[in-house]
Image 1 (cartoon, rainbow, N blue to C red):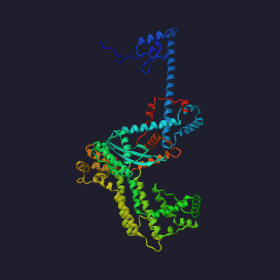
Image 2: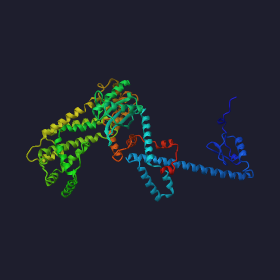
Image 3: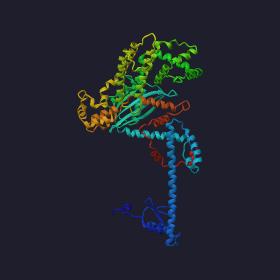
Image 4: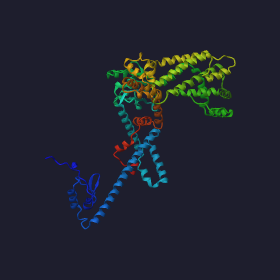
Amino acid sequence: MAKRKVDTENRGFQTRWESEYMFTKVAGKPVCLLCGESVAVLKEYNLRRRYETKHADKNKNMDMEQRLQKAEELKRGLKSRQALFKKAKSQGQAAVKASFILAEEIAKSARPFTEGDFIKNCMIKVCDEVCPEKRQLFLNVSLSRNTIAERVDQLSINLKEQLVKKGKDFIAYSLAVDESTDISDIAQLSIFIRGVDSSLSVTEEFLALRPMHGTTTGHDLYEEVSRCVNEMELPWEKLVGLTTDGAPAMCGHRSGLVAKIREKMQEENATGELTAYHCIIHQEALCGKALKMEHVMSIITRTVNFIRAKGLNHRQFKAFLTELETEHGDLPYHTEVRWLSQGKVLQRCFELREEICLFLDSKGKDTTQLRDEMFLCEMAFLCDITSHLNAINFQLQGRDRVISDMYSTVKAFKTKLTLWETQMRKENLSHFPSCQTMKEKLSTSAFPSTQLADKIGMLTTDFRRRFADFEAQKSRLELLGNPFAVDVESSPPNLQMELIDLQCNDALREKYAAVGAAEFARFLPGTMPQLRIQAAQTLSMFGSTYLCEQLFSLMNLNKTSHRSRLTAEHLHSILRISSAQSLTPNIDELVEKMGHHQVSPSTSNK
């Protein structure tokens, strides 16, 4: 005979049991209203036996109406206690959640962990004035240094877990790798990932920041990148591209990072070929050096340093400009690392060239070079061409940039250079306003248009040389940029049939015109699997190491001379939180994982 199962008998709690046996139903179980203990099996015999054994003497003199009143009073008391416990639990969770939220804000704002105590003191003082009856709730929020450090680590781990989960769905991914040195002279290797899933959605996130205490050879870099990829459980065969800063340790043919990763992919029997790029923005900045106009920049730098380096000279110069009622009230500094500042310095110096000469004359300085017409023409040209270079630099910067769009920007700039060279030889200065100003002011000598046109030619040649690796990928990039203009016959055989279907589909052509190249890839139908894979691989590629450079700026904001002992683990956690783009910490999940722990006032004040 089979054993009876209580759960299948559909036993229900009867209301009369409340007055007869002083029991009520809580969360599906019968609970005694007198002692608070529960009975395992919902059965009248069990309830009656329990009541008669433990509590019969207490209520033997009560009639039925008194028993009903007693039962109702006890039920109200039980509900009151339950509400109190729920409220305490809810307040405890709220206190923990608040500490997570503030820890995230502290990390994002590059504040030290000790700021938590300062914030709490401010909250308590505000509370005392606004809602003093809720002071205890604010005291329950733990914001000590150790708590904030722990919360930041937990938030970082949560973000990493989300990224690992997303990484499992990637059908293609690429890496951007760059290396810099922090304030403690420790080499820091920054790694970002850009992955594309089967729906062609792009995820661009911080992967890791690895401190390198020893050498930074290609093998050392490879070991760190390899360890990072394996920790994230990313398959090597889906790695499509690698973008670096172009340093020998990164791009060396035999022992550089790129070569080592290609060897690893061969060991893993990866069928795809790794495409390696030198950061477009870095390349563009290096192209500017092809002009060979350091002699002009050195004179300007010396002049600016004379004015800005000494406080007295700087104050007198600003007062001098105020007296002359000039449009600008000061000169900016120029640093080699921040190459965009060069354009601002040149533009300001050119606009204030006469005022600068007058001020230097008053200081007894020789201004012969600064008044030389050839020098002024070269400075005007350098001012204009640097302005154009800065404009393209700004276009190439930013997150979520598609490499095909970046290639189109560079391609357009090369076409502009050809036009400018032709126009310069004809002394057509339409796109060179500073040069136009100088040409109108020349007294004796003619404007050196031929020499300056040769400079533009040198710049054009250097652009072609430096961006040759992008030209090699031209057909691949154009396939994503405008698949309707691609020549089918010259395309890879595995794409030709799908390309014909695509180019003959009027609905898809209209969709492309409506959403643009970057978004259109997601609308490619499942009947075009090869085109979707090709689009995913191109979408996953980094065009620059901009995100790495941006991360180093964040690193320098956090690890300063006042926080030089910040541990590598905490720095890593802070940067993961502050650089997160498409991912957000799941704070509710973290609170739940902590077991709904309620922080006591005594703990929060430690």
